[in-house]
Image (tube, rainbow, N blue to C red):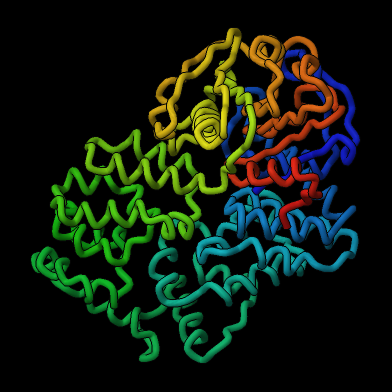
Length: 502
């Protein structure tokens, strides 16, 4: 879900976009929200480096934290737990807590705890803090990390995340933050984690049954491991993930090993290993069960996977047996796209700056995301005109019943960002206009030809400081890489007051 910036609510200053077109600057909260929900940690954007974006993010977080501590606490918790954005919420939580501690405002401890939701994240938090600020930690930062460690550390987490590749091991986190165990069993785990970090002995307490089962599994001779790898229950009792199984076997993951690993593999792990399942020769019956799970609407919802993940997987797999399930999963992930009555103009930015990668891991471009959501909106609307634009513009054909992926395949690279010309050419008394873009238009006010009485919804994918257009009338800006922002459109048009989504 994403927040919109309504003209009457946000003070803006006229400044040029990156293409020297007419634009405006948002207030600190609006800028922070749009940047945070539109950024992936360490990812460059066309007009802004990752370093510049991260620096701007930190400055905004610290400023807003001091001016409105309650708002920043709610925002960062929402960012991690609902928007499911890890890196940006971790950075935000630590920086907010630091800023609050510097001026003596309480609340930083709970903020840090709220943004650390996976067992490797307390270590990630320490790594960020030491690299950015050094060894001295304010008490709220230290105690927030300690609270998260106590909440998240268990035997399975230790086996999965406490590896030599980590700069900060579980034992480091426990010693540096003085985290307190909640139970005697967790106390035994904490002592084991610290001993393990310092290489002190191999004894495992009786209460740590999963660790003991793992130790027994590790003692199996290498020549017998391929046979033992077929025992799914034994692997599960030892907390053996597919990553650990691959290393333990000391041989390639064959079809039998993958079948044993699948019961303990989460949704994301399955999604990312479809090509590996094909290459290992996993049988069609097993693949069908995996595909059925991927296409399950409830599992898609629980996985919190963004639509771009399914698009990336669809492009990466080498066989057709996953195509229908990935297509269904992508459609389920767009469940919040509303049915829009009347006539809707959907303009999708396909300019050069949109063909910058969202991340190296997926290889997807902002243009891909724009096409996915533009197509989804058009397919769901009562009557929509779908247009791609850049230097020029053109209609994108579709029929009712087409899949999102089919329509996405009909988009092109169209060069520059002439939003103004596209709006003038295609707007014909529509009931609303939706623009999916990075807002870096050239020329004058791109929305000038649309009457003030017609709502215009700009969905900004990148989160630059300056956005297109002049604030007036019914103009709204959304941000983020999920579809939930679209759910606000009917609320706005029904005259309701759509607030921050937290």
